[in-house]
Image (cartoon, rainbow, N blue to C red; front, side):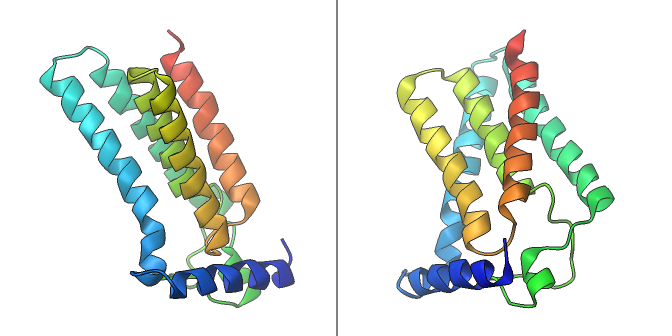
Length: 166
């Protein structure tokens, strides 16, 4: 992504945000919805004393911890720091740690967990759409490069497939 592409993408996203009821904060709604569905899924598994609870909690937690450990090792600058142009919404300048995207990895890990528990077409479509929306918003708001998000999705997808294969 070039600086010009970054500016174009974030300018368009800012224009959309300016027309939304909560502004740029509205872009957080898919993330919160994904988390709420996951918490609900874990609570249901716990209430039903379902043996899948452990794996549905462990696999996403492992992905989160792995991504959190990788970020300082890779220490890639966020696009808004590299280009010197603020993103849409809140940011922490000079934070680094852009690769891989923790939001995208978490959304994918949660989506795979929920789809594993409820392997129905409506759930698969809903969770896939939420995951892709969260991931796309990380790029559209200027918080991550597309490669940060793609790496996170591939990593979370591979570990989830291994974690739920047995």
